[in-house]
Image (tube, rainbow, N blue to C red; front, side, top):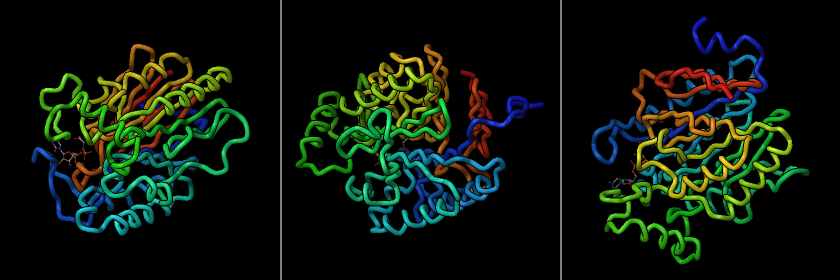
Length: 329
Ligand SMILES: Nc1ccn([C@@H]2O[C@H](COP(=O)(O)OP(=O)(O)OC[C@H](O)CO)[C@@H](O)[C@H]2O)c(=O)n1
């Protein structure tokens, strides 16, 4: 049998769908900042709908879908089209009979302030909070939370724009602190430019994790260690340089990695943002999988996947330009 079919003989503990960087806009094709990559703004919704059809027909049924951020493109904001574009993406996802967990990316924050995101369909934090165990999420407006879809298995969604100059009121202490951190490491006039930086991830279109979020993450992982759980963590921004280029990382990705590496439980980190995708198995045995983005996927292909979780591995069945992969724990 070809992998991953050979690795998929038994019923999984749970299976879920993954998709990243849809960046839908009702616009003609465009390209990235450097003019090198074509961006298929309008086709991206069609590719998402095709993914939804495949996920909805899966047997056994999926438990949930993870949308790894940037579901609509920043061009919508400039055209006053953000609400309509978001509604079209959410309507496509509503055809699924299962919950969708949404990471927040830079393009969400080009289109909406955090308060609007919190009141929108992109707020996927489950309510009510779990009765036992660590707090559902960090205090404040951070879109981070955890959930357990099966015994001994926990997912943690992180908010890589908790520290960010995007989506926050410029007069707020959090914005001021984020801008201070960014300017400290990025002296460029254009804060989106990584030119000449020692730490090229310090650009405006990235963000970072507050200490409050990291402390909460640490508490969740301590609980998971104590309860022999396996943890899949995820967010828009990659946190390992070998699963990303030098720019597309969370500002303080090293802090998130040290929290993960101080525990036994984390088996995988899922991210988007880098549209070419990436993968590495780190020195502590954690798989870092960065999903290829729909937005730069030609209309005749696609970029989504299903992940089957077993006791000893996760099996990714990729569609279109996402490759199959078996990730052993
Ligand atoms: N040197 C640069 C690079 C970018 N910009 C501006 O920064 C914003 C973000 O770029 P964009 O390509 O839109 O971000 P994505 O999240 O879609 O993609 C991330 C990775 O590149 C994909 O692999 C945008 O406003 C650019 O204009 C800049 O000013 N200077």
